[in-house]
Length: 110
Image (tube, rainbow, N blue to C red; front, side):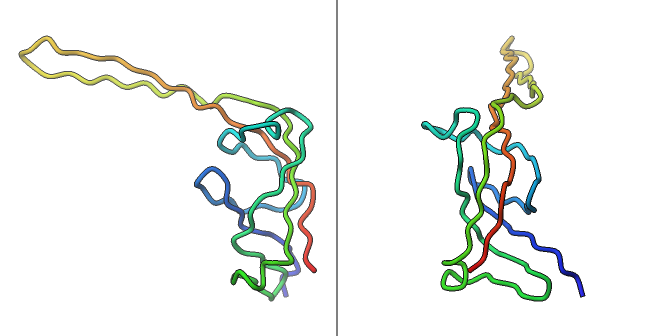
């Protein structure tokens, strides 16, 4: 049997599969929790503990996923170009998303 403990958490409108000790980049976490070294509690959507799967809100009420903000980083630059032919209408644009690099410190289950 697989004894691995992992959780699926939701932050920034996206869901991530995380394990304890994992480092990942998520959408920018705002407020005072965005500073490096700040502790963050993530919202669990599902928890898998070996053969047990917890997914309902009642089951997840005792589950806590804690993380620490490591740094603020920027994603790779995305560039784009739009134009309309025969009208000399051109536009070049770019975007670089700001991200928070977090480390999952613990996944606890009551």
